[in-house]
Amino acid sequence: MASCADILRSEFPDLDGEVFAYLTGILHGSGADFESVDELVEAVGELLREVSQDTKDDGAIRDICQRLFSTLQLDEARAQRCSQVLLDAPIQLSQITDGYADASVDLLPGLLLKRGQTSMVNAKKLEKAEARLKAKQDKRMERDSLKTSGPLVLEEASASQAASKKETRMESSGKNKSYDVRIENFDVSFGERVLLAGADLNLAFGRRYGLVGRNGLGKTTLLKMIASRSLRIPSHISILHVEQEVAGDETPALQSVLECDTTRESLLREERDLTAKINAGRGEGTEGARLTEIYAKLEEIEADKAPARASVILAGLGFNAKMQQQTTKPDLLLLDEPTNMLDVRAILWLETYLQTWQSTILVVSHDRNFLNAVATDIIHLHSQRLDTYRGDFENFMKIKEERLKNQQREYEAQQQYREHIQVFIDRFRYNANRASQVQSKLKLLEKLPELKPVDKESEVIMKFPDGFEKFSPPILQLDEVDFCYDPSHYIFRSLSVSADLESRICVVGENGAGKSTMLKILMGELAPVRGIRHAHRNLKIGYFSQHHVDQLDLNISAVELLARKFPGKTEEEYRHQLGSYGISGELAGGVILVSHNERFIRLVCQELWVCENATVTRIEGGFDQYRDILKEQFRKEGFL
Image (tube, rainbow, N blue to C red; front, side):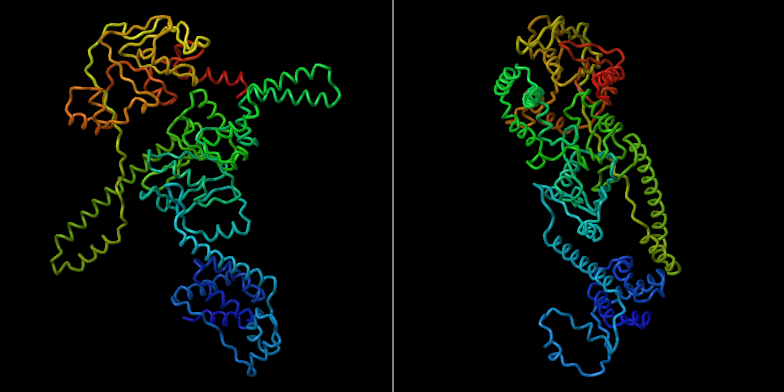
């Protein structure tokens, strides 16, 4: 096959020595950098069109580049070749260099020109081609440095990513103005455990992505890798990573927290107005006395210490000093389980607010209704990879189930086909007359793609004891109960509720309204200030608290804990119980639960109690009616 030099000489017979040396230098000096014909066309195509003096069109130039690329691919040694030019006379280099004080002057192009020959190349285009070559060499150096530096580490997590020449070139040139996020061929690990391998993540600007998957697979770690830019994100894209929602606008995060102190903000606003009125000469004579009162009140509430307190709050949420001064309307918003600590009212507001969010969102959540309301796309993390689905969570579940069914059918069909071929091979393996057929079947088996069966997710099992005796009502009730922690503030007044063995009750209400307090009164852990708690004498109550670790003695083992709580069993029975997980069977007995998860409430509960205004109200229309009540409140308060 002809060399690159031969191809250039044959296609461009009038090619001058300067351009020839330049092109061969690119082809043999940087040939390893070209991964495709497109990259070679980008590097030298414009220059080749120039030297052809428009005698060759784009198609012809691409064909020439294809031949050059093929030659470079076959030339494993990639030896640097240089075309030889017959000189008219011997050249004494020492005599030539005597006239050049600058040792950096490149003499080779002049030496390669024949007598009387001048360069036909546009100097500006040659400079552009040289700039492209330099950028390509810089990228290779960056790639090599990435290889030697190893993965980026954040605490115990680490991320590594294959270098992208195109993205690096655009980033260094400042031409990348897109707000889309493309992270290709990356790995994420936590310690020695690989969470993602060869994964791709594409986030189109303005879309809202729900990141789902089982606990422990790496969803939170992935958000941290993105937020810390351990995975490459274009530098012009601003990122905000929070676990709970903050109303986003151009207000710095620190100021957003300060504005939550309405008393301080009101006093400061009045102080500014009065001062401006006095300075403008529009005072009425009473402003001085009022300003004295304001300053006294500000000193009383320690208003000067508010920024420090707010900074501590933000630091606890993961905001460093720089982030506290950033605006809270980023290009990429990362939310990690934002609904975990929110009540139903706050969740409904957050759903409505995020639906109008203009930039990109990536949110981790296990709340299906929240994802249905917010997400435009679902990203499923499983088997160390990421699969993207268009649509909300319900659409994702439908498409996923269909994909899994098709995958299993294809796998089973291939397995049957493999078994059929294997039967033939085993039957005629030692039959000389069928030897060629056996060899053909063996090659066929080798060429079959390797299909994998569906990875079935293990079910979580939670077993509830059954076999309880039936009690005659009343089972559990509160009658005209008052309760307070502080006599100046009553949590409940005249509270009357009841439950029986068939009850499926969900308690909702704003955080701090007294939901958990009511449960503790029902259990007898808290005594009413006034009123009566009645419980059946044989009633046994099981309690799983929101912060269940508070119920555990961390100084003993799990087996010892069960033995103390439920004495009379063998150690083997306790260990068997600890090793059993999953949901099965019916729960015998009544249930009163506090939850903000809409889907869970709809699936389990038959009654809805709303805890507000120091009492509990039963909502006859269930969750739909409660949702409508909240929306009407939002409209009245101007939130919708």
